[in-house]
Length: 524
Image (cartoon, rainbow, N blue to C red; front, side, top):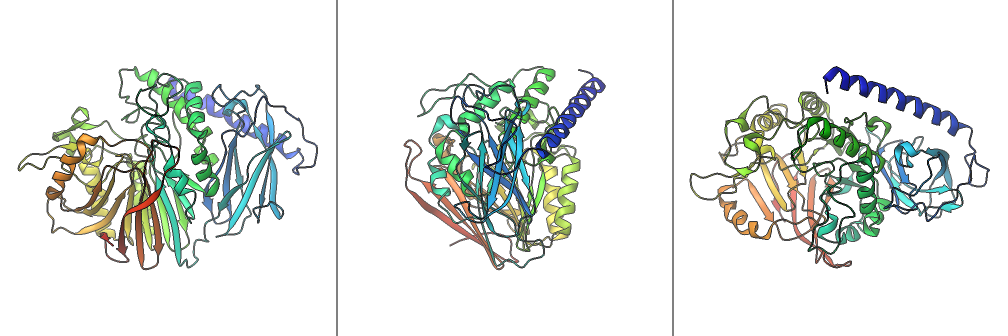
Protein backbone atom coordinates (compact mmCIF):
# COMPACT_ATOMS: atom_id res chain seq x y z
CA UNK A 1 0.00 0.00 0.00
CA UNK A 2 1.33 3.47 -0.87
CA UNK A 3 2.40 5.42 2.21
CA UNK A 4 -0.01 8.35 1.63
CA UNK A 5 -2.91 5.91 1.21
CA UNK A 6 -1.94 4.09 4.38
CA UNK A 7 -1.66 7.29 6.44
CA UNK A 8 -4.97 8.58 5.03
CA UNK A 9 -6.61 5.33 6.06
CA UNK A 10 -5.19 5.70 9.56
CA UNK A 11 -6.40 9.29 9.78
CA UNK A 12 -9.89 8.25 8.74
CA UNK A 13 -9.98 5.46 11.29
CA UNK A 14 -8.66 7.74 14.01
CA UNK A 15 -11.22 10.43 13.23
CA UNK A 16 -14.07 7.90 13.40
CA UNK A 17 -12.72 6.50 16.69
CA UNK A 18 -12.48 9.99 18.23
CA UNK A 19 -16.09 10.64 17.27
CA UNK A 20 -17.17 7.35 18.79
CA UNK A 21 -15.38 8.06 22.07
CA UNK A 22 -16.82 11.55 22.27
CA UNK A 23 -20.31 10.23 21.68
CA UNK A 24 -19.91 7.61 24.37
CA UNK A 25 -18.64 10.22 26.82
CA UNK A 26 -21.83 12.25 26.34
CA UNK A 27 -23.96 9.12 26.77
CA UNK A 28 -22.17 8.14 29.96
CA UNK A 29 -22.73 11.55 31.51
CA UNK A 30 -26.48 11.08 31.58
CA UNK A 31 -26.39 7.62 33.14
CA UNK A 32 -26.97 7.33 36.88
CA UNK A 33 -23.73 6.60 38.74
CA UNK A 34 -24.97 4.65 41.75
CA UNK A 35 -25.60 0.92 42.02
CA UNK A 36 -29.22 1.41 43.06
CA UNK A 37 -30.22 3.86 40.32
CA UNK A 38 -31.83 2.88 37.06
CA UNK A 39 -29.51 2.80 34.05
CA UNK A 40 -30.11 3.06 30.32
CA UNK A 41 -30.29 -0.71 29.84
CA UNK A 42 -30.49 -3.80 32.01
CA UNK A 43 -28.62 -6.34 29.91
CA UNK A 44 -28.94 -10.07 30.41
CA UNK A 45 -25.95 -12.33 29.83
CA UNK A 46 -25.58 -15.90 28.63
CA UNK A 47 -22.95 -16.46 31.33
CA UNK A 48 -20.99 -14.60 33.97
CA UNK A 49 -19.83 -11.40 32.18
CA UNK A 50 -16.70 -10.85 34.31
CA UNK A 51 -15.15 -14.19 33.33
CA UNK A 52 -11.83 -12.52 32.43
CA UNK A 53 -11.42 -10.89 35.80
CA UNK A 54 -10.58 -7.30 36.63
CA UNK A 55 -7.36 -5.30 36.68
CA UNK A 56 -5.84 -1.93 37.46
CA UNK A 57 -2.75 -0.13 36.24
CA UNK A 58 -0.91 3.03 35.26
CA UNK A 59 -0.69 4.37 38.85
CA UNK A 60 -0.36 8.13 39.31
CA UNK A 61 -0.40 10.07 42.59
CA UNK A 62 -4.03 11.08 42.02
CA UNK A 63 -5.42 8.28 39.92
CA UNK A 64 -5.43 4.81 38.44
CA UNK A 65 -6.85 2.93 35.45
CA UNK A 66 -9.48 0.27 36.13
CA UNK A 67 -10.08 -2.47 33.55
CA UNK A 68 -12.52 -5.23 32.79
CA UNK A 69 -14.12 -6.81 29.75
CA UNK A 70 -17.63 -8.22 29.47
CA UNK A 71 -17.25 -11.75 28.12
CA UNK A 72 -19.93 -14.26 29.14
CA UNK A 73 -18.55 -16.64 26.48
CA UNK A 74 -14.86 -15.72 26.66
CA UNK A 75 -13.48 -18.16 24.07
CA UNK A 76 -16.25 -17.52 21.56
CA UNK A 77 -15.63 -13.87 20.77
CA UNK A 78 -16.95 -12.84 24.17
CA UNK A 79 -20.56 -13.81 23.56
CA UNK A 80 -21.83 -10.22 23.74
CA UNK A 81 -24.50 -8.71 21.45
CA UNK A 82 -23.38 -5.89 19.20
CA UNK A 83 -24.72 -3.15 21.45
CA UNK A 84 -23.28 -0.65 23.90
CA UNK A 85 -23.57 -1.76 27.53
CA UNK A 86 -23.24 0.52 30.59
CA UNK A 87 -20.84 -0.76 33.22
CA UNK A 88 -20.89 0.83 36.66
CA UNK A 89 -17.75 1.11 38.76
CA UNK A 90 -16.93 2.06 42.33
CA UNK A 91 -13.74 2.83 44.24
CA UNK A 92 -13.68 2.53 48.02
CA UNK A 93 -11.31 2.99 50.94
CA UNK A 94 -12.09 -0.45 52.34
CA UNK A 95 -12.14 -4.02 51.04
CA UNK A 96 -15.86 -4.36 51.86
CA UNK A 97 -16.70 -1.46 49.52
CA UNK A 98 -18.60 0.43 52.22
CA UNK A 99 -16.69 3.72 52.10
CA UNK A 100 -17.05 4.59 48.42
CA UNK A 101 -15.09 7.67 47.32
CA UNK A 102 -15.48 7.53 43.51
CA UNK A 103 -18.12 6.02 41.27
CA UNK A 104 -19.39 6.32 37.76
CA UNK A 105 -20.47 4.53 34.59
CA UNK A 106 -18.44 3.56 31.57
CA UNK A 107 -19.75 2.28 28.25
CA UNK A 108 -18.53 -1.08 26.97
CA UNK A 109 -18.69 -1.00 23.18
CA UNK A 110 -18.51 -3.82 20.63
CA UNK A 111 -15.85 -1.83 18.74
CA UNK A 112 -13.45 -2.56 21.61
CA UNK A 113 -14.74 -6.03 22.49
CA UNK A 114 -16.82 -4.62 25.37
CA UNK A 115 -13.68 -3.76 27.30
CA UNK A 116 -13.71 -0.95 29.83
CA UNK A 117 -10.84 1.40 30.67
CA UNK A 118 -11.79 3.79 33.47
CA UNK A 119 -9.32 6.58 34.26
CA UNK A 120 -10.17 7.38 37.86
CA UNK A 121 -8.90 10.72 39.20
CA UNK A 122 -9.20 12.67 42.41
CA UNK A 123 -7.59 9.98 44.59
CA UNK A 124 -5.09 10.45 47.40
CA UNK A 125 -1.45 9.59 46.77
CA UNK A 126 0.35 6.54 48.14
CA UNK A 127 -2.61 4.59 49.48
CA UNK A 128 -4.58 1.43 48.85
CA UNK A 129 -8.03 1.47 47.27
CA UNK A 130 -10.53 -1.25 46.38
CA UNK A 131 -12.75 -1.34 43.29
CA UNK A 132 -15.60 -3.26 41.71
CA UNK A 133 -17.71 -3.31 38.55
CA UNK A 134 -21.39 -4.02 37.91
CA UNK A 135 -23.21 -4.74 34.64
CA UNK A 136 -26.91 -5.43 34.67
CA UNK A 137 -27.49 -7.55 37.76
CA UNK A 138 -23.99 -9.05 37.72
CA UNK A 139 -21.18 -7.86 40.01
CA UNK A 140 -17.47 -8.46 39.58
CA UNK A 141 -15.07 -9.59 42.25
CA UNK A 142 -13.36 -6.87 44.31
CA UNK A 143 -9.88 -5.75 43.29
CA UNK A 144 -7.20 -3.87 45.19
CA UNK A 145 -5.02 -1.13 43.77
CA UNK A 146 -2.61 1.56 44.93
CA UNK A 147 -1.79 5.10 43.85
CA UNK A 148 1.76 6.33 43.46
CA UNK A 149 3.39 8.57 46.07
CA UNK A 150 3.39 12.27 45.21
CA UNK A 151 6.30 13.17 42.96
CA UNK A 152 8.32 15.22 45.48
CA UNK A 153 7.53 13.07 48.50
CA UNK A 154 10.29 11.39 50.47
CA UNK A 155 9.63 7.63 50.23
CA UNK A 156 11.40 5.25 52.61
CA UNK A 157 10.74 2.03 50.67
CA UNK A 158 9.04 0.70 47.57
CA UNK A 159 8.32 -2.91 46.59
CA UNK A 160 7.50 -4.26 43.16
CA UNK A 161 7.69 -7.48 41.18
CA UNK A 162 8.43 -7.99 37.51
CA UNK A 163 7.25 -10.82 35.28
CA UNK A 164 7.32 -11.91 31.63
CA UNK A 165 6.82 -14.74 29.14
CA UNK A 166 3.76 -16.81 30.03
CA UNK A 167 3.32 -19.47 27.35
CA UNK A 168 -0.07 -21.03 28.15
CA UNK A 169 0.79 -24.35 26.54
CA UNK A 170 4.06 -24.90 28.38
CA UNK A 171 2.75 -24.91 31.94
CA UNK A 172 0.47 -23.59 34.64
CA UNK A 173 0.81 -20.08 36.08
CA UNK A 174 1.89 -21.34 39.48
CA UNK A 175 4.25 -18.37 39.80
CA UNK A 176 1.28 -15.98 39.85
CA UNK A 177 -0.10 -17.93 42.79
CA UNK A 178 2.98 -16.86 44.77
CA UNK A 179 3.11 -13.36 43.34
CA UNK A 180 -0.46 -12.61 44.43
CA UNK A 181 0.55 -13.31 48.05
CA UNK A 182 3.55 -10.95 48.08
CA UNK A 183 3.59 -7.53 49.74
CA UNK A 184 4.05 -5.32 46.68
CA UNK A 185 3.12 -1.83 45.55
CA UNK A 186 3.29 -2.65 41.85
CA UNK A 187 3.77 -5.37 39.22
CA UNK A 188 5.60 -4.71 35.94
CA UNK A 189 4.99 -7.04 32.97
CA UNK A 190 7.84 -6.94 30.44
CA UNK A 191 6.18 -8.71 27.55
CA UNK A 192 5.07 -11.97 25.94
CA UNK A 193 1.75 -11.81 27.75
CA UNK A 194 0.36 -14.15 25.10
CA UNK A 195 1.90 -16.43 22.47
CA UNK A 196 0.67 -16.48 18.91
CA UNK A 197 1.39 -20.11 18.05
CA UNK A 198 -1.12 -22.82 17.23
CA UNK A 199 -1.58 -25.94 19.39
CA UNK A 200 1.62 -27.76 20.29
CA UNK A 201 1.64 -31.23 21.89
CA UNK A 202 3.52 -32.11 25.05
CA UNK A 203 2.38 -29.44 27.48
CA UNK A 204 -0.35 -29.59 30.12
CA UNK A 205 -2.57 -27.10 28.25
CA UNK A 206 -3.38 -26.33 24.61
CA UNK A 207 -3.99 -23.18 22.65
CA UNK A 208 -7.52 -22.66 21.39
CA UNK A 209 -6.86 -22.12 17.68
CA UNK A 210 -4.24 -22.31 14.95
CA UNK A 211 -1.68 -19.50 14.81
CA UNK A 212 -3.52 -16.24 15.36
CA UNK A 213 -3.81 -13.57 12.66
CA UNK A 214 -7.23 -11.88 12.73
CA UNK A 215 -8.63 -9.52 15.35
CA UNK A 216 -11.04 -12.24 16.48
CA UNK A 217 -8.08 -14.63 16.82
CA UNK A 218 -6.10 -12.25 19.02
CA UNK A 219 -9.14 -11.45 21.16
CA UNK A 220 -9.83 -15.13 21.79
CA UNK A 221 -6.18 -15.82 22.62
CA UNK A 222 -6.03 -12.96 25.15
CA UNK A 223 -9.29 -14.24 26.60
CA UNK A 224 -7.88 -17.75 26.94
CA UNK A 225 -4.90 -16.47 28.91
CA UNK A 226 -7.05 -14.26 31.10
CA UNK A 227 -9.24 -17.18 32.17
CA UNK A 228 -6.35 -18.39 34.34
CA UNK A 229 -7.33 -17.99 38.02
CA UNK A 230 -3.79 -17.31 39.22
CA UNK A 231 -3.24 -14.59 36.63
CA UNK A 232 -6.58 -13.04 37.59
CA UNK A 233 -5.58 -13.09 41.27
CA UNK A 234 -2.30 -11.30 40.58
CA UNK A 235 -4.09 -8.65 38.52
CA UNK A 236 -6.68 -8.13 41.26
CA UNK A 237 -4.04 -7.78 43.99
CA UNK A 238 -1.87 -4.94 42.62
CA UNK A 239 -1.74 -2.24 39.96
CA UNK A 240 0.23 -3.29 36.88
CA UNK A 241 2.41 -1.45 34.39
CA UNK A 242 2.65 -3.39 31.12
CA UNK A 243 4.70 -3.37 27.97
CA UNK A 244 4.98 -5.90 25.17
CA UNK A 245 7.67 -7.89 23.43
CA UNK A 246 7.25 -9.89 20.22
CA UNK A 247 4.77 -12.72 20.83
CA UNK A 248 1.89 -10.31 21.36
CA UNK A 249 2.12 -10.07 17.53
CA UNK A 250 4.62 -12.59 16.11
CA UNK A 251 7.95 -14.02 17.20
CA UNK A 252 10.94 -11.75 16.52
CA UNK A 253 9.08 -9.22 14.41
CA UNK A 254 10.75 -5.84 14.01
CA UNK A 255 8.64 -2.77 13.22
CA UNK A 256 6.76 -3.75 10.02
CA UNK A 257 9.09 -6.66 9.26
CA UNK A 258 7.51 -10.05 10.04
CA UNK A 259 9.34 -13.23 10.95
CA UNK A 260 7.34 -15.37 8.56
CA UNK A 261 6.82 -14.97 4.83
CA UNK A 262 3.96 -12.47 4.77
CA UNK A 263 3.43 -9.47 2.53
CA UNK A 264 3.96 -6.15 4.23
CA UNK A 265 0.29 -5.25 3.80
CA UNK A 266 -0.74 -8.54 5.43
CA UNK A 267 1.62 -7.91 8.32
CA UNK A 268 0.45 -4.31 8.76
CA UNK A 269 -3.10 -5.64 9.14
CA UNK A 270 -1.94 -8.37 11.50
CA UNK A 271 -0.04 -5.88 13.68
CA UNK A 272 -3.08 -3.60 13.82
CA UNK A 273 -5.23 -6.54 14.94
CA UNK A 274 -2.71 -7.55 17.59
CA UNK A 275 -2.27 -4.01 18.90
CA UNK A 276 -6.00 -3.44 19.21
CA UNK A 277 -6.52 -6.71 21.08
CA UNK A 278 -3.61 -5.87 23.39
CA UNK A 279 -5.16 -2.51 24.27
CA UNK A 280 -8.55 -4.13 24.80
CA UNK A 281 -7.12 -6.52 27.40
CA UNK A 282 -4.73 -4.28 29.35
CA UNK A 283 -5.30 -1.52 31.94
CA UNK A 284 -4.01 1.24 29.66
CA UNK A 285 -4.88 4.91 29.40
CA UNK A 286 -6.40 6.67 26.38
CA UNK A 287 -2.83 7.73 25.58
CA UNK A 288 -2.38 4.16 24.32
CA UNK A 289 -5.53 3.99 22.23
CA UNK A 290 -4.40 2.19 19.04
CA UNK A 291 -4.35 4.01 15.72
CA UNK A 292 -4.33 1.21 13.18
CA UNK A 293 -0.95 -0.53 13.51
CA UNK A 294 0.41 2.12 15.91
CA UNK A 295 0.07 2.26 19.69
CA UNK A 296 1.86 4.59 22.12
CA UNK A 297 3.38 2.34 24.78
CA UNK A 298 6.63 3.89 25.97
CA UNK A 299 5.92 6.08 28.97
CA UNK A 300 7.26 7.13 32.38
CA UNK A 301 6.05 6.65 35.97
CA UNK A 302 7.44 8.34 39.06
CA UNK A 303 7.05 7.05 42.62
CA UNK A 304 7.95 9.88 44.98
CA UNK A 305 11.68 10.45 45.19
CA UNK A 306 12.57 6.77 45.32
CA UNK A 307 12.02 5.42 41.78
CA UNK A 308 11.24 6.47 38.25
CA UNK A 309 10.32 3.85 35.65
CA UNK A 310 11.12 4.43 31.97
CA UNK A 311 8.99 1.81 30.21
CA UNK A 312 10.33 1.04 26.74
CA UNK A 313 8.86 -0.43 23.56
CA UNK A 314 11.67 -2.21 21.71
CA UNK A 315 9.54 -3.85 19.00
CA UNK A 316 7.40 -1.22 17.29
CA UNK A 317 10.24 1.06 16.16
CA UNK A 318 13.30 -1.19 15.91
CA UNK A 319 15.26 -1.82 12.74
CA UNK A 320 15.49 -5.33 11.37
CA UNK A 321 17.66 -7.84 13.21
CA UNK A 322 21.13 -7.90 11.63
CA UNK A 323 22.89 -10.80 9.91
CA UNK A 324 19.56 -12.50 9.17
CA UNK A 325 18.77 -12.82 12.91
CA UNK A 326 19.50 -15.88 15.03
CA UNK A 327 22.22 -17.10 17.38
CA UNK A 328 25.51 -16.70 15.51
CA UNK A 329 28.69 -14.61 15.17
CA UNK A 330 28.06 -10.92 14.54
CA UNK A 331 28.48 -9.51 11.07
CA UNK A 332 29.15 -5.84 10.28
CA UNK A 333 25.41 -5.04 10.32
CA UNK A 334 25.35 -5.58 14.11
CA UNK A 335 27.58 -2.49 14.47
CA UNK A 336 25.56 -0.25 12.12
CA UNK A 337 25.27 3.19 13.80
CA UNK A 338 21.85 3.64 12.22
CA UNK A 339 20.46 0.41 13.68
CA UNK A 340 18.04 1.02 16.51
CA UNK A 341 16.10 -0.84 19.19
CA UNK A 342 13.87 2.07 20.11
CA UNK A 343 13.78 4.50 17.21
CA UNK A 344 15.36 7.96 17.49
CA UNK A 345 12.35 9.67 19.07
CA UNK A 346 12.04 7.13 21.91
CA UNK A 347 15.80 7.13 22.49
CA UNK A 348 15.83 10.91 22.87
CA UNK A 349 12.80 10.72 25.16
CA UNK A 350 14.66 8.23 27.35
CA UNK A 351 17.78 10.38 27.53
CA UNK A 352 15.78 13.51 28.40
CA UNK A 353 13.92 11.70 31.15
CA UNK A 354 17.06 10.25 32.68
CA UNK A 355 18.74 13.67 32.55
CA UNK A 356 15.91 15.35 34.46
CA UNK A 357 15.15 12.60 36.95
CA UNK A 358 15.36 13.38 40.66
CA UNK A 359 14.67 9.78 41.70
CA UNK A 360 17.08 7.71 43.76
CA UNK A 361 16.63 4.68 41.47
CA UNK A 362 16.17 5.09 37.70
CA UNK A 363 14.59 2.01 36.19
CA UNK A 364 14.68 1.11 32.50
CA UNK A 365 11.95 -1.51 31.99
CA UNK A 366 12.48 -3.23 28.66
CA UNK A 367 12.43 -6.52 26.84
CA UNK A 368 15.62 -8.19 25.56
CA UNK A 369 18.93 -8.68 27.36
CA UNK A 370 20.98 -5.50 27.26
CA UNK A 371 24.34 -6.82 28.48
CA UNK A 372 26.69 -8.47 26.04
CA UNK A 373 26.88 -12.24 26.29
CA UNK A 374 29.11 -14.44 24.17
CA UNK A 375 27.55 -17.91 24.29
CA UNK A 376 30.71 -19.58 22.90
CA UNK A 377 33.39 -20.08 25.57
CA UNK A 378 36.08 -21.27 23.15
CA UNK A 379 39.01 -18.86 22.71
CA UNK A 380 38.60 -16.63 19.70
CA UNK A 381 35.03 -17.80 19.03
CA UNK A 382 31.79 -15.91 19.46
CA UNK A 383 28.06 -16.57 19.29
CA UNK A 384 25.56 -13.80 20.08
CA UNK A 385 21.78 -13.55 20.18
CA UNK A 386 21.11 -10.97 17.49
CA UNK A 387 17.54 -10.29 18.58
CA UNK A 388 18.98 -8.85 21.80
CA UNK A 389 20.98 -5.64 22.20
CA UNK A 390 24.02 -7.64 21.03
CA UNK A 391 22.60 -7.15 17.55
CA UNK A 392 22.35 -3.38 18.06
CA UNK A 393 25.80 -2.55 19.43
CA UNK A 394 25.90 1.13 18.47
CA UNK A 395 22.49 1.83 20.03
CA UNK A 396 23.59 0.11 23.25
CA UNK A 397 26.87 2.02 23.26
CA UNK A 398 24.99 5.31 22.98
CA UNK A 399 22.90 4.44 26.01
CA UNK A 400 25.79 3.21 28.14
CA UNK A 401 27.96 6.20 27.24
CA UNK A 402 25.06 8.46 28.15
CA UNK A 403 24.85 6.77 31.57
CA UNK A 404 28.60 7.25 32.02
CA UNK A 405 28.58 10.91 31.03
CA UNK A 406 25.31 12.13 32.54
CA UNK A 407 25.38 9.88 35.61
CA UNK A 408 21.68 9.63 36.45
CA UNK A 409 21.23 8.23 39.93
CA UNK A 410 21.48 4.43 40.14
CA UNK A 411 20.36 3.19 36.70
CA UNK A 412 18.88 -0.31 36.85
CA UNK A 413 17.64 -2.22 33.80
CA UNK A 414 14.91 -4.86 34.25
CA UNK A 415 14.53 -7.34 31.42
CA UNK A 416 12.52 -10.36 30.28
CA UNK A 417 12.38 -12.38 27.04
CA UNK A 418 15.05 -15.06 27.52
CA UNK A 419 13.16 -17.43 29.91
CA UNK A 420 16.03 -17.52 32.38
CA UNK A 421 17.52 -15.56 35.30
CA UNK A 422 20.60 -13.35 34.91
CA UNK A 423 22.42 -10.55 36.72
CA UNK A 424 24.86 -8.33 34.81
CA UNK A 425 27.13 -5.40 35.41
CA UNK A 426 26.57 -2.98 32.53
CA UNK A 427 30.01 -1.94 31.29
CA UNK A 428 31.16 0.82 28.96
CA UNK A 429 33.28 -1.87 27.26
CA UNK A 430 32.14 -5.45 27.82
CA UNK A 431 35.39 -6.75 26.35
CA UNK A 432 37.41 -4.97 29.04
CA UNK A 433 36.53 -6.16 32.57
CA UNK A 434 38.31 -3.11 34.00
CA UNK A 435 36.07 -0.63 32.15
CA UNK A 436 33.59 1.38 34.25
CA UNK A 437 30.36 -0.24 35.42
CA UNK A 438 27.60 2.27 34.70
CA UNK A 439 24.48 0.29 35.59
CA UNK A 440 23.00 -3.01 36.71
CA UNK A 441 20.74 -5.38 34.79
CA UNK A 442 18.35 -7.88 36.36
CA UNK A 443 16.89 -10.37 33.88
CA UNK A 444 13.85 -12.24 35.18
CA UNK A 445 12.93 -15.78 34.24
CA UNK A 446 9.61 -16.65 32.66
CA UNK A 447 6.28 -17.39 34.29
CA UNK A 448 5.94 -20.60 32.23
CA UNK A 449 7.98 -20.46 28.99
CA UNK A 450 10.92 -22.87 28.76
CA UNK A 451 14.63 -22.20 28.41
CA UNK A 452 15.96 -25.12 26.32
CA UNK A 453 17.47 -27.62 28.74
CA UNK A 454 20.16 -28.64 26.28
CA UNK A 455 21.33 -25.04 26.09
CA UNK A 456 21.98 -24.70 29.84
CA UNK A 457 25.40 -26.46 30.01
CA UNK A 458 27.03 -24.41 27.20
CA UNK A 459 25.60 -21.20 28.67
CA UNK A 460 27.07 -22.07 32.07
CA UNK A 461 30.39 -22.98 30.42
CA UNK A 462 30.52 -19.54 28.81
CA UNK A 463 30.18 -17.66 32.11
CA UNK A 464 33.94 -17.49 32.58
CA UNK A 465 34.25 -15.71 29.24
CA UNK A 466 31.70 -13.08 30.38
CA UNK A 467 32.99 -11.80 33.75
CA UNK A 468 30.43 -8.98 33.89
CA UNK A 469 27.72 -11.67 34.25
CA UNK A 470 27.25 -12.38 37.96
CA UNK A 471 24.47 -14.98 37.81
CA UNK A 472 22.65 -17.32 35.45
CA UNK A 473 19.93 -19.93 35.99
CA UNK A 474 17.97 -21.58 33.20
CA UNK A 475 16.15 -24.33 35.08
CA UNK A 476 13.56 -22.43 37.09
CA UNK A 477 10.40 -20.45 36.37
CA UNK A 478 9.11 -17.60 38.52
CA UNK A 479 9.43 -13.83 38.96
CA UNK A 480 11.66 -11.19 40.54
CA UNK A 481 10.70 -9.36 43.73
CA UNK A 482 12.42 -6.01 44.27
CA UNK A 483 12.68 -4.07 47.53
CA UNK A 484 13.96 -0.52 47.22
CA UNK A 485 15.07 1.77 50.03
CA UNK A 486 16.99 5.01 49.89
CA UNK A 487 20.19 3.03 50.54
CA UNK A 488 19.78 -0.28 48.73
CA UNK A 489 18.02 -2.17 45.95
CA UNK A 490 17.43 -5.87 46.61
CA UNK A 491 16.25 -8.30 43.92
CA UNK A 492 15.00 -11.71 45.03
CA UNK A 493 14.71 -14.40 42.36
CA UNK A 494 11.52 -16.24 43.36
CA UNK A 495 11.02 -19.64 41.73
CA UNK A 496 8.31 -22.31 41.80
CA UNK A 497 8.73 -26.04 42.35
CA UNK A 498 6.76 -26.92 39.21
CA UNK A 499 4.71 -25.51 36.34
CA UNK A 500 3.35 -28.95 35.43
CA UNK A 501 0.83 -28.96 38.27
CA UNK A 502 -1.77 -26.30 39.20
CA UNK A 503 -0.20 -25.81 42.64
CA UNK A 504 3.43 -25.35 43.64
CA UNK A 505 5.69 -24.26 46.44
CA UNK A 506 7.74 -21.09 46.05
CA UNK A 507 11.20 -20.22 47.31
CA UNK A 508 13.99 -17.70 46.83
CA UNK A 509 16.68 -19.01 44.49
CA UNK A 510 19.09 -16.09 44.94
CA UNK A 511 19.17 -12.48 46.14
CA UNK A 512 21.28 -9.58 44.95
CA UNK A 513 21.84 -6.11 46.39
CA UNK A 514 22.85 -2.87 44.69
CA UNK A 515 24.03 -0.17 47.12
CA UNK A 516 23.09 3.44 46.49
CA UNK A 517 25.79 5.19 44.51
CA UNK A 518 27.66 2.08 43.32
CA UNK A 519 26.60 0.31 40.13
CA UNK A 520 26.80 -3.46 40.04
CA UNK A 521 25.07 -6.14 42.11
CA UNK A 522 26.44 -8.32 44.86
CA UNK A 523 24.90 -11.66 45.84
CA UNK A 524 23.75 -11.82 49.46
